[in-house]
Length: 546
Image 1 (tube, rainbow, N blue to C red):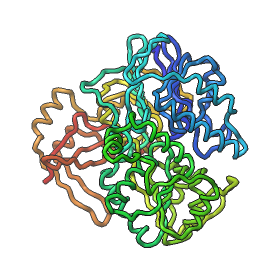
Image 2: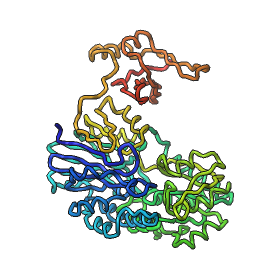
Image 3: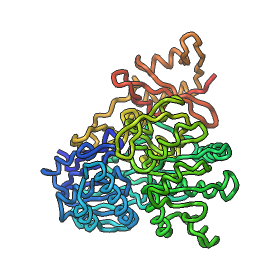
């Protein structure tokens, strides 16, 4: 039996409650302890039951987002002597995020932990820099910048002479407030990769174009006399949006109106201002050259209390509000939404991931004038008519399918485990990986060996390696006819008889257009039992389009 195993306690086939246990030869390592936004009590938590028998000897926090950090005091109260490792930025932010979690869960009548448990958790934090190897627990590990958020990390774990790469939440795109994930100059071979898959089924549009369209939409609303609400994750996304809007106002792309930060976004942004040395150089350069704060400058205002919030809500003056929570589950954002959504002059712009059960997702699915259920001041859901302009802009801090594949390719492995994604995202990404790796899509509580199990779906090409090479050479320039069947609304691909007969089994295939010097096609077999992409030809059969 393999001496390296993985178990997801939460955050496996979902985005939320991330917590992952590595059962290693020298001991057990726990990574993250998050909560499910919008859930109450035990329903918000990962299932920590297995830890009773598989006690962790150490823990790592990959970053300070609620879905990775919010249950930390629950774990440290059970293992009070366990050390918890993280970066300096994560440690500084953890205090604010956990404090806000305690406040909100207490208001909801189901506190997840006590103030004393929170303080105990913070006392267990041990700050380590990126790229420093920790060897105190038998196994060893190293934190590697993962983009996504200030202080966020991937983890390279070494145990028994083998290595595992855990991506954490990762982004390969640099933004004004975070650099892109570290990409090793040379590939690092590992036994297994455990990767997030949030956007595993998506190729996100150009971020530059999304920002441009986003700014244009805000300008249109403000010039029309309306108000703009941007529900935002308080940590990372709110600070990026702040930078985008301050820059757009300075350059005249949008009117210079009050820009308000409300909810947890206030304290986090103040902390960002205090941590400029850990942020991209552009922010430090701006502060040095302008003599102004990078974030806390006019026309930005921090909403101090409920009275000021009520004044802003009932004012008819054009303004932009960035408020937590980003999915409209709780916090300040639902209060603005309830007041502003009924007016067609206003706008609500979504800029981040919305889980399947969130009010934000429901709002995006509505027709204009439909009703969405939003929490009131007491946390009870009430219907609100949505006549405002509602749009989504893809400014995610997660890598899309292409970005994930690019990162994974730098850590060649025989074994791949996909986590942190909904069903379609994990299945789709698995279809692009499972010719190269033995891919697993575990459920929470499944114990999975971190080795190549040899269970990859075999290639569906009916030819030996030598025969395949000869056949590919013979048909390298084969013509493929493509036509559109208007009656059945399908694209018809006609392969030469000899080519299809020699190479392909019967079954269903998907087609992808590849752009390059020539336009080519790639055929990918589909698994009709699971309705997910199956094994692609390796290497793919490509042919010029006629």
